[in-house]
Amino acid sequence: MKIAAAYLCDQGKVRTRNQDNLYFHEKILSLYHLKSYSRFHWQTATKKAVCLGVFDGMGGEQYGEEASFLAAEVLRAKMWENRTGRIPGDILREVCHTANEAIYKRTLELAADRIGTTAAIIYLQYDRIWICNVGDSRIYRLRSGILERLSLDHVWKGECKGKPGLTQHLGMNPEEITLFPYIVDDAVMRRDKYLICSDGLTDMVPEEAIKNILNRDLSLLKCNRLLLKTALDNGGRDNITIITCKVEQ
Image 1 (cartoon, helix red, strand yellow):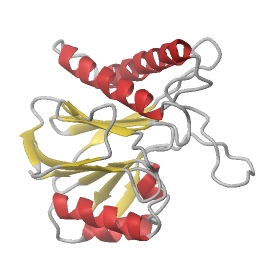
Image 2 (cartoon, one colour; image 1 turned 120 degrees about the vertical axis):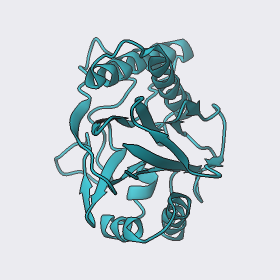
Image 3 (cartoon, helix red, strand yellow; image 1 turned 90 degrees about the horizontal axis):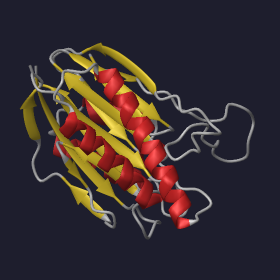
Image 4 (cartoon, one colour; image 1 turned 90 degrees about the vertical axis):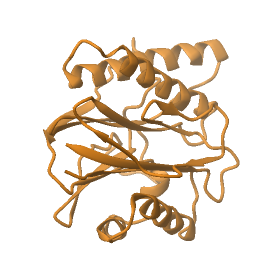
C-alpha cells in the first residue's frame, strides 16, 4: 500500500496559545507554537510502519501544551525504538501508558493541579491499520463516500451542563485511575481517507459537513485548509489540528 498525508495546526480565533501538538512522519511541533501546516503532502509506502497522531492539551488547564508535547515526544521515541516487529497494538498501548506516567510526573514537578492531553493515533503497516485514542480527539474513515467514526469518545454519559468532561486522558494518576486506551485494527482499502483531529474541528463543524468536504475532489492540503476555514467561520473557539491521510494504491 502507498499513502499520502498532510497536516495543519492552528490556534483558532479565540485562544491566545496553541495547546495542540502532533506526530507526523517523525515531526512534532515545538513546545510553544501558534500554527504550522504542510507545504506539500507526504507520500510513502506502508511496507515500513507509518504512524500519525494528534494530541490536544487539556482546554483551559495549566500547561496543556506541555502535556501534548510530552505525548508527542513519547510517540516519536517509541517509533524510533520500534525495530523488533512488535505487535502494533502493544506499541500503541505502551505509548499511552508511558506518556500518561511522564505527564503525571511533570504535573508533580510543576506542582500543578492537573496536566493532561488527549491522544488520537493511527498506525499503518502493509494493508492494515491500528487506531488508538484516549479522550475525545477523533479518528474518522471515509470509505465509498460514507464517513465512519473509528475512535471512541471517553466522556461522561450522564446529564451535564455544557460539554461533558473526559473520563480518560493522558496525565491521570496511575495509582488512582486505570488507563484504558481504545485500540482496534482493521483492513485498509484503496481510496480510503482517514481524518485525525482535535475537538477544535469537531466542536465547530458537524460530521455531515466534514463528510461533504472529505468527499470533494481536493488535494489533502486544500481539504485541510477548507476544514480549517469552516471551523474558523463557525467560531474557531479552540485550537484546531487536522491530519488527513489517503490510501493511494
